Image (cartoon, rainbow, N blue to C red; front, side):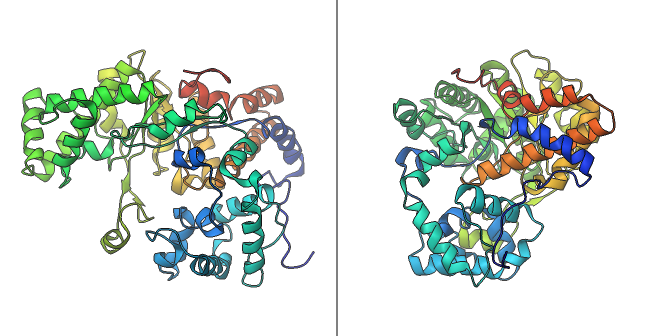
Length: 478
């Protein structure tokens, strides 16, 4: 085999010890072909509605994927040269961006990004080539030729990937027309669900808080100029999302604080925020109260509340000003779940209709806080690693950190959290291999029976997220 040839090893991510690896192989075989359930991600539903061919390899692999472009930027590449914030690149610029990836490909060795892309190159597109400056043009051309074929359009790939459920992330004022059109299209048999993401409307310190809350009220048909109106508008929009198939809401603030204010203080601070006259500490207090309101609404409407706190967003002001928000400059910070969630869990934590999934990119809280909370509150589940800790070693650390406290039934199932459509099967396959690896180790150490491990790998990929996110059994609709 030449230095430019590459085929992923069939035992990748499985244990190095031959005896344990043999157990893992058997477990992986039981789960590898199960359908994909993706209850949290960021794929645009219009991709599947319009079903247009992907433009080029750059728009598929590089531009939308923060994992890819942020590392190149750290090595001195201008994000504009990768298409970030630029709109569609012409052929020359797209090919140049692909060459930049090839030139920096060695820097991705050992990263999940490279692992995922190598999986995609081989498993999805059938390429047996190492990306480097010598092979860049040939790979680019080969991928373009594939993307022009009907079997590589979004809907065909959706079926090829065996995606059973795909959840998107949507603004509360969205009319969800793409979701409605997909649901009404008899030629599309997949299930694409919206997710209610109200973060912007719960941040009173924002300069555009008045405009945002006005828009929220208009979408809901409610006057949102007062705190009471804001609450009713949120209730109405959540129900609208639920009626259009949503099963969850998603929340990502700097902290998961849920301390409640008196109703008088909430009304006063909301009015001050609308007038742009709220202080910094008051804005935090009101935001925590508004998040607590979301929990109460979740106990009413049954949407699963997912929490993704602990991110300092848009860390580089210069990059935010130049390219806009969410271009990879989001940095993890420490999180306190025990104290911040106590008000919420004392309020609705035992409500039979309330459910929350706790995610973190602060690994220190997995065994200390999240697992103990999920191990005692019926409404709490431990979310899978995401973003900075959805790498192989971190996923194994997650399993080891939480399973000794809560086993596997109190976990969320895998979450791919991706904008890069073709990385979905790569990420889910990685998770399945790692679960097989972890369980094989427990079997080899005689900590669980082989039969128990076999039962778990059958349920973890698809059944577990279906149960946690109230998706119903396979083939059922909400």
